[in-house]
Length: 476
Image 1 (spheres, rainbow, N blue to C red):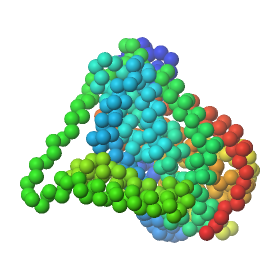
Image 2: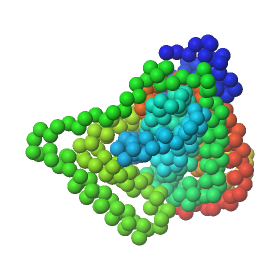
Image 3: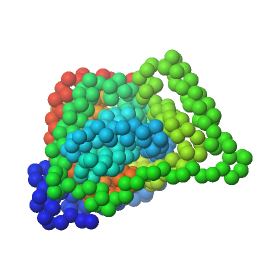
Image 4: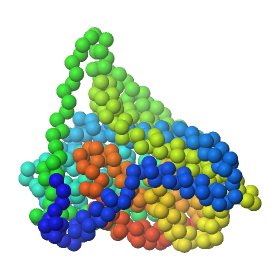
């Protein structure tokens, strides 16, 4: 069912603006993979304009294409582990309990937005699926008539607002993991643990302000009255009955249905985690991307109870990682062209960009320019980790040159990086699969969030950035 003219006329205020924006974005935005391919072309053209030879450019493209293989797997695992945990039976029971809390349509939308952002601080992949399942559970309530599109958009706010300010931030995780950092970047920044990025009071304050702003917008933009379109109006089937367990057909399958091995694996993980906390600084432990993924993967195995149920959940989660697997090699190729294709005067495009950002000078102007640049680049590279590897070499070099705090520079990138997600629907795909909706159903609401978020983010990075002092990087 599609929106009709009378329905649009009955909407008022922010809800009407949201629906007006939806049609434009759906019409003009191509698939995210197209953005990545266009990005490669633009970077190659920039290198040509810089005087690099075609041979140098294609060599950089081919040689750098697989530079992010390990990081690509890690980011795919963030999505997979989050999906597996969110679809476990204990989490499903929690979601049903939470779905009974809201007592009005607008409160239900803002409630979903708040919880999706709160969960996203821990794991953005978990937030996408958790938020989608919570939206479905609320939509099933027969005592509450809620707009399903607004619920879906609220479920996306974890990734559209604060995900990169949380513990699964690709850029912060990368900067805290020496083995995942490209050598050239490691020599500029050193290792930055979460104490210098995610857990600074400035970053936490910024996160709290954005969460409050997002909840308010979600509440007041939720359609009311005759403008509400429920899941039933949209033709969405809300039946979430679990698939019946497959019958055992042979004795050799008994371990697949046993809880013994998941419990053993979970206990081994717990033992390893305790050992890490006893022998290493706490921040270095929580900043470890590999350790983070290990804990979430084993948590998913434990929550599903048996290897068979766990593997069924993994099979459903794998399609959600497809975009990461095919796009990250293109981001690696872009980074290689920017940093390796030497042109006239022995300078790369990355070097020229570093000079430009350095010329802006330090202080608030630098952070605002970096934030705006991050937003624009994010339209072509809708990936926090992939884009950071493209952007970081020259941005962090510029930050060092103007003596801007490197940890805060990472957080400026992080808060700005989330903004393009509100326009580019690439990371909506796993959520849309859960909701049974299309991007055009959500983007009007998320675009409205973008309009409010952009000036607030720019103001926050400028004001809070003035409270930092420069700390010289420790190069291993």
